[in-house]
Each structure stands twice: as C-alpha cells, then as structure tokens.
Image: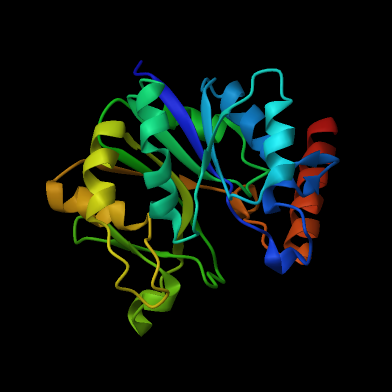
Length: 249
C-alpha cells in the first residue's frame, strides 16, 4: 500500500456561521468538526494528516497542536480557492514522503471510515467521491463522457443550463498521487465566475492525460453534507444523532 496522507482544507473563516470561530472548530455532537474528520482518517488507515488553515486561525492551531498526535499545519496566506490551498501544502506533503494524497474539506463531520477506506487502497489513477442529490443546489456537477466515465466537474456558477440539471454532484473528496498534484496544480487557472483556483479542475486535467478516474458514489447525502451555516450545522448534528439511534436499535 502506498504511503497515504490526508490533506484537510480547513482554512474557512466561517463568516456565514456568524461566529469568530474557525469554521472547522464548530462542534457537532460536542466535538469540533475537525476532530471528527481527523479521527475518521485515522480509523480508515491514514495516520498522517496535513491541515491547511488561515493566518488568523489561532483557535484551530492551538486545538490541533494540543492533540496527542498533532497534524502538520500549513498556512494559506490569502484565500484564493481550494487548488491554492492544496498548492500551499505541496511541500509539507513531500516532506512526509506522501505517495497518495486524500483531500477532504474540513467541514464533513459525518464522513464514515468505511467510506474513506477504498481511497486508502487505491494505487493508481485518481478517485473522486460523488453523491446523487434530487436538489443539487450549488454543488459542483459531475459531467460524464459517453462511456460513463467522469470527464470533468463544473462548479455551479459556471454551469450551462444542461449541466445545472445534473443530479450527481461533487462531494469534495479526492485521492491522487502527489506526483500528479505537483504537476497539475500549477496548471490550474482562475478564469471562472468566482475568480478562484478550483481544485475540481484536477479531474479535467487527469481526463486529458488519460488517467483512470474512479468515481465512488456515496449512498447517503447526509454523510457528505457540508457545513457552512448554523442551519447546516443543526442538520449535520441531527443526521449524526439519527445514525446513533439507528445503530443502537
């Protein structure tokens, strides 16, 4: 098995949470979201993690440094998008001798280890987790080619009407080789509606290279529910509580 390292993008300031806390420090079931995610990675067989944070995130820095096995912390100086966050972490990943990198958003407290496990054993190509949503909202759309393979991911702001109607959306979780990321990330531009460097562009770049792109479709959208607002935080907590009740019955 190649040396896999988790890369958690936790630079969000949580402005829509109406709080001074870093977004990933908001609690679900009494624990910060970042702790749930780090524990999930360890349980899935990924003991080493790099966490990208903002320069002002003193709360998450102190919290993570106090963990029994602190992750490596990297600063994204200016928030310019998810690909820019990965770029900030490339040297740290190389120092950890990462061969495969599992990339995750920092606001997925309900992700289960068994969902992450297939990525840990992936030796080649690139994987992308997707989910079907009847109301896909502002999630990036999964565009497949005529053979059913993933061709690209289109962010909602850049979707055509036909793409906006797609119900299969991006869960924001990827697995790729560090060698590919080192080659692909510098190629990503910001010529899009948001003017940001989108990590989703790595899928189109991998497709152009002829790499194998493995889609892993998640059955339950609640497991990869992102948390950006107090309402979404309440929904994430309710989902976890329901899963606990089901498991206890």
